Image 1: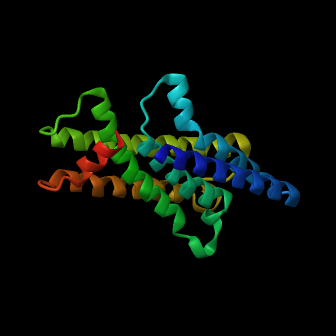
Image 2: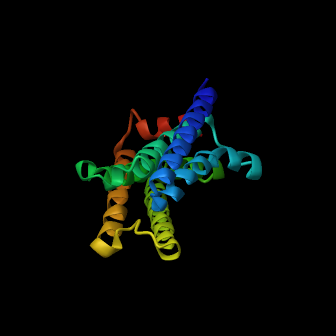
Image 3: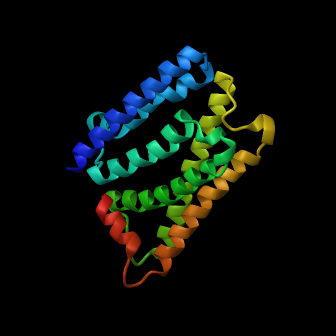
Length: 200
């Protein structure tokens, strides 16, 4: 069932992105072409990783990924909520969400590698936060590369200097800290552990 939902979401939002590309082509919004077309590829990344590299990606994990891509890239970049004055908070929301999700993903990866030990909570917490900061840094590297080689201004460095980059990384760090502290303190319900078990 979840696999069908994933496929349906990928089809609908790939088609929607192509429609936005056609619209932007007609109005001459050249700077938006890359965001429109890359949406299709980004949505297919879990399926490509499964086929090409035989990486274990569950339907639940793919669903979580697809929903995040819809929120972050489709609504943020394609629909352009990032650059809308009335939704100034949306960029911070997506980076906070990425911090939460990558922290949970860190635990999933530890389970895959067979190095997760529930008693080593402080080590697990250190890995979770470090993994999130690594992903946040790589994302900012990607944005910097896009600005440098494609002449775009994704990082808004022309208006804010390093402020936008640092805010993005700090808000992702905040999301990671909230999840990590919850993981560290929870004893009986173990909500984070249950989420990890559902994804892996």
